[in-house]
Length: 356
Image (cartoon, rainbow, N blue to C red; front, side):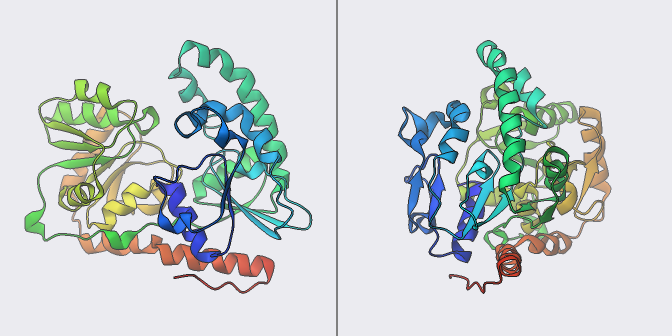
């Protein structure tokens, strides 16, 4: 249940009788709201170890999507950060694509994925990526309208597909977070997220090692063991934690460290909803959520020196927690639902009720 699934939950509110199609579904981890819908998987869901190793089946996903029979529907909404938009809608059905990002591993982050892969994957990636890029561009014509989750993603859609996109920011459960009194704020900074290369958790750990300042890191991922070895005495690597622990640390940290470039980035919004400022790399979705020198500060290069400078500027900032909470409220779930419902109603001429 990550960002994409939270979007799916909101879509379930807008379309309470909709059917859901996906490659793989693990009923043990999805929410009750999603389970209420009829869920159908592609043939990939029946392949060996699909729940755990679905990424290995990426080359088969275009074929699997194109085999789906969607003839019973007059509206199809694809939620896309992989190849989901490649379905074949039946004319005259309307196909709307809510795009979290064009496939990062074949477009803007291809070289990062390539450099961090093993030998066999590196041998396979160039021809596979070439095939997927060709298919991905061709299937953009199967979409009637694109909706991007950020200006950053809208620019990618324009660059790769030569298509315009409206922008509707994804829903964030801001009501789940609360500020604490200033006397309860502690003397550590916080980093939250999946510990993978492009999010640059190593940058945060190295900077706080050098400053000998306190940093808490929450999240699991492929870099967890490496970061534990890298961390100095002032850095605590907690790994994945339950939500209550996460919420506790959000509210009591001096600020959030966000050193990667994200398509949108829910974590900075959650931190601001907790009344805390954000120190973010000044690229991608963070630039659309964090207000520079008000609800946080940006640094312009992904270097230890630039991050340390940003922390020092944050220490001098006249920060008001109420400004952060107010900014986070712009990304509430009900804002997303209202904007998406209005968009669909304007596009289709239909009136849509919202399920509680």
